[in-house]
Image: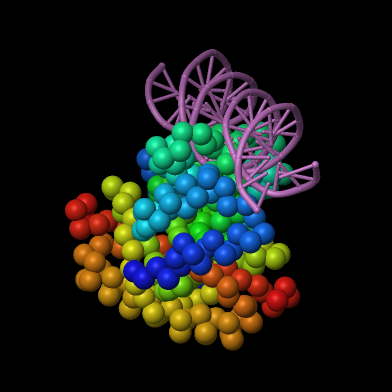
Length: 143
Length: 143
DNA sequence: GTTGCTGCAAACAGTTTGCAAGCTT
DNA sequence: AAGCTTGCAAACTGTTTGCAGCAAC
């Protein structure tokens, strides 16, 4: 699971935006929870532990901004809230396993999809910019 | 796009539940909009056109029931609401292309994923029961 | 006739927005 | 100093729930 985005690189993306303490805190939380698919609520709680003054609105606004800057990806697992993960350069080649019993989320690496994407782009004349692949089932502890 | 569930077959699933006019109406709406990925709101509107007396609560409760009876699949495209499609027997092998500009949803057939599923089941000891694959990008009219 | 089903309205949860005050640059 | 950014609270949207009446079997 190679994260190629480092803090210095990310900071550059803010040349047009202010790099405020709240934004730094949220970024830190995301970095400290790589692979955890945090929800806005979880991010708020973890941020509060670091920086007492932060509210929901800021978290949502920051995550929207981060998405625009391609720092995070927004994910929809169907559990009622959006979840966020740090963008990775290899991000087009990993998927999620969602356990229907314990709700844990696991990750899988994969390169098989590239071929499928190519097929689709030519056969359907559709320019693919991103994808989401979720497998629902039961993990080794729950099956 | 072969739908193998027919009305007679579905009716059998109701042996334990009442086959009320509202449920029939919603089923009809789903059948008349195959491949349209309707939201609860859209289903409500279309149902109202057929049967003046029906409310939101009934639509949601019915769709929950239909999901339980495996008559529909619930989908999350990240547009803020759940969407529903009739279950098909070939349903484990079709995916969705979501146009980021016009929001239209296209479908793709595919068998490539079976191989990937098998890999995952053995490598991650995870029993897969369903999956969702969404491609985001731009359709031929929008790119 | 029972029991499950329905509509309504109120409750809920996650997210968004308006605004005045505050902080970054 | 200027304007973006923040926190708060109120507004919103999609969905769920409680309850009394109704209808399917």
